[in-house]
Length: 313
Image: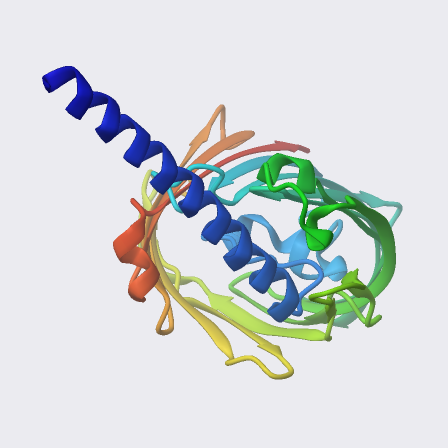
């Protein structure tokens, strides 16, 4: 009797998991149909990922920078969203900057890889104030592997999807020693992301996403050996047909090497982050934990994000 109950329990659990995967796929498909951003740079440590937000950032720090980041969302849910990001940028000559970014998004049966090249040009506004204008060109490889769903004899799930959507973007980055302001549209073309003919057709297009943000460094104390700064910043993202997303961040930085702070995404999440600079800040490590404040947060254990950044002067 106990063995039968155990088998029944396992069978019931398996069916529930299978149903959950099917539901998860439907939700994922809805996400593809409804979300309109080609390249969604919603990173907790977004100040470390400015290449994704604006092409004008390329070369602004006067040195070669290379970054690798991993973002794991909805921890505790199988096949939850994962993002891998690699970008590199460097000045090229006196006023020119170049960069390359590769962002891979994976969730259940969906895989998107965004590959973009950046070009920026510096315009001297004042002695310590520069305006960078940038353009971004590249595109997105979209793959939907419907075989992974395990669903058979259903016309909607009979054909995998694989395509490439080209795109271009523009951006401006105003930089001074103590502050920055950014305005950009990383993707200007409205491409179809998903289209399916048949019993249940569905399609989605990429609407233009606008980003506006800025930050300021307040020097609270400075001595011969120690410096402490307060660093508030804000980033707003607007897409047609979707609520405006706003990130409010505040952190404290010690000696330009250790940063501890928090981020609040309006009506969506709260994040705590910590960054370290090693070897005179040539190598930087950052970690962020994001907790979802909406109803989705009750179904997962939050989001983890790790960043490694290399600066070579």
